[in-house]
Length: 423
Image (tube, rainbow, N blue to C red; front, side, top):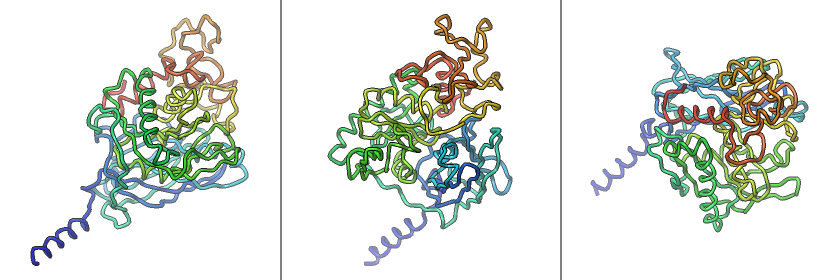
């Protein structure tokens, strides 16, 4: 009896003394609200997670990409401990016609290495001149009872491409939506197909030994996804839907917390949502997530195009299709995306890759078909924004057709996630 009682006491003490030693990361869930002119951030909860998929030599983000960034500093010394840049759905919402009339709230999350001492997380956004402005600060006490220290729900998961330890590799997790329990075998096959789409596309194909890919077996109550314009509604695990911001082909989820909860069971740097549907559609948001329907005839293109947005901050190079946003790029500033330019600061982009005999701007003629230049039309507009190549996977529906500038941006990002020197 005494031994049994002692065992019970030890178990209670073990599970009641969870500390940061059991977790590598903190996920800060917050609400992002506002309209065309104003925005506000409010912390919702802080969740401890078991994995942080980078080593601490690469805790500072090296590229000036994204419309938002966080900085984590020591509360005592003010030393920078971690930084990260990203985009969100809220930023796109701000650029819609709807945001000029209404205000909305969005779920968002950022993930940081578990701090050893009190730290301050500060959120920044870009103003109209693309300058960084402080939005919000919050002090994190790593011993606080406010931090949720539950292990994530153990959904079935597997490593479908193994390159090595997650601390030194780029880790992508593929998460299903709209696959019922009876359709999990279809998801396994689809996930394998989408894995191959990525790994067989240059320049990812050159770096297969640097990329881990995971899949999570998360069933949905119903098959498919929401299609509001067709009055089709499906109850799914991640609540994905077409017709985001009124664009029928724009497939996203607003349920960001559910996505993060699902992903937490594996190490990950990047999240790809695979939606069980044949309608053309998808989306990619820099360091937020990417998403695609599973069975469209252009699924290979959709995967790598949307992942290009998510992974390397690549901008859209097309300019003739309808989109949900207005005036997304300020013509008087240089956009942060590495593959589009207004020529305001072309030196900071790919000017070093342009032959001195190539005119800038560059005529879109057969003579320059395979030439890096600056071709007018990109970033959703016909005039004032330039792309580096006549055609590219970021412009038209062609698989495995990233231009040299996009390929360089992708290679640099792979180096960041795998702890290599960036040149």
